[in-house]
Image 1 (cartoon, rainbow, N blue to C red):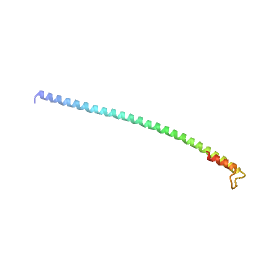
Image 2: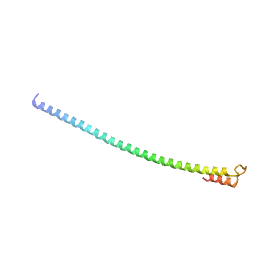
Image 3: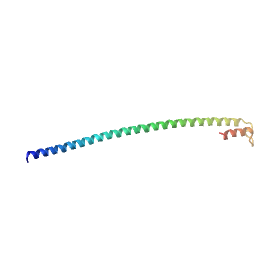
Image 4: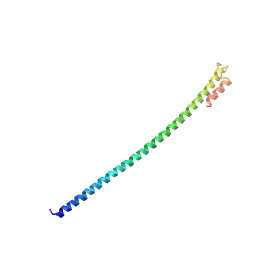
Length: 110
């Protein structure tokens, strides 16, 4: 083989090696960049989900407190009506008295 052929072959091998190096290095950097971007997007999504869950939990606690207050209000009203019924001297009568009718109206008008 002559020197020119060997030099040409060496140059071709060097060009192929440089191209392969550039390809695989760029591919590795691209993978790393895509992976970092994906992890950032996933972290943002996890944070958004947690904020939504926290907001829903706050709303649920507010609704539970409102329901508890309404239940307590109803219990108090029923206790007042029961006390009034037990204090009614005509509570054992076979017919409804005017006081009994008014107590029933309080219960049904709620």
